[in-house]
Amino acid sequence: MAGPARRARVVLFPLPFQGHISPMLQLAGALHARGLAVTVLHTFFNAPDPKRHLGFSFVAVPDAIPNAVAATNNGIAKILALNAAMETSGLVRDALASLLKSGEEEEEPRLACLVIDSTLTATQKAATSLGLPTLVLHTGSAACFRLFRSYDMLHDKGYLPETESNLHLPVKELPPLKVRDLFDPSKLPNKEIGQKILNLATETTTNSSGAILNTFEALEARELEMIQDELADRIPAFAVGPLHKLTSVDGAQTSLLNQDRSCIEWLDTQAPGSVLYVSFGSVVHVTQDEFMEVAWGLAYSGRPFLWVVRRGLVLGVEKPELPEGFESMVEGKGKVIEWAAQQEVLAHSAVGGFWTHNGWNSTLESICEGVPMLSSPLFGDQLATGRYVQDMWKIGILLEGVLERVKIEKAVRTLLDENEGMEIRDRARDLRNKVQMCLDSSGSSRQAVDKLSYPNRILLLD
Ligand code: UDP
Image 1 (tube, rainbow, N blue to C red):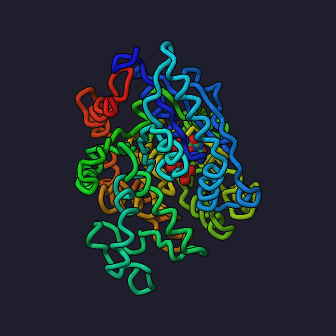
Image 2: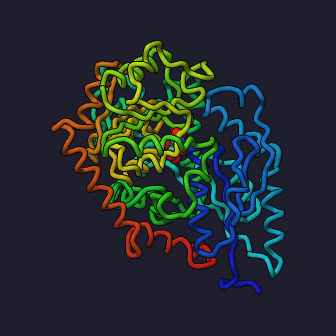
């Protein structure tokens, strides 16, 4: 029996990096909760753990990233190599063909679509060649979605390539961004690669049946409206974020590294709103000098802190070493761990601020818990998000320029307990309430999920 009443299956293919795997698995959880069968296609590289998601099925697709590329810190090169390898091998197409075939069996859910990460053009080409529709998950903000589609305009209007003299120039077409927030691909060692990576999301979106964004109306109403105008209603956009609040899939299930839970017990011993949580996510690196400035800035701030120093955080160093004298100076006040249960940390009442690199997941997780931010964006979309945090939403302080201990020390104090930071803290709390509203049954994100999926099927594609 074919037809709309029959249960549908969605296949999802995340880009194998933490910041992309988590929202894809969260989306999988949200769709599964609505009755859809879920299959996750994944690479061997950074493979998710099937044992943590008993309701989903998993199919591994061998990836053939050359060893030299797999070993580099260059995420952009890895994405391009992955696409090239998948296109050459045809293994994604084979996996999809086999899922389509089993979906023809009457007792099996029929395959409705492939949901892909916006950078995975190869997976989309495989689906298209089999007549299978694709939906594209954008794991960044709506503002960055627009920014990444605007590079031709930014060059035409002379904002790019950036120069020493135009760094502080406002980009009037994309307020509140300044030229320094744009992520200039021509600054990368290989310009063409930089340009290519920006084009991937535009290509996959244009060739898709719909765009799914991990953001919400109350946060980015203007950007979302412009996106829908730009996509000219041909490609519907669904703002279903914050995805981690719309699903029962939690941080421990999606984390590639083991989360150290001792930090929760430590937070239990700290005063409400007193602790600065510090983490720069799963991929960015800092230099040894920057690492020292962060350490001493935290120590001299005199405020309690929980600092994630993950392996590889310092460029070229597997296990970063804290400076001499640091541990004795911060004893009883600071805790350093390799990887946190971040969502729980941010929800803990002892946490009063988050010093972040503004990866989009970290930013959303902070917003959801009403935690104000100290922003140190380092790369890519983080730069624009840091600007939005300070100048648009006004829920944080952007640390611009070189990281220096004195600057850090002052910013930490302002954020956590000085009068100057009070309005920022209040606004962060107000925004948390708006998140709650978008998650209610009549809220915008719930409604977007309703428009996307009906119990048992993808509404859009029926
Ligand atoms: N994260 C975590 N423990 C940590 C640091 C980060 O579980 O100690 C999680 C965090 O909750 C977030 C993800 O890792 O969901 C990082 O994603 P984000 O987009 O913020 O940054 P990226 O790692 O992609 O730069």
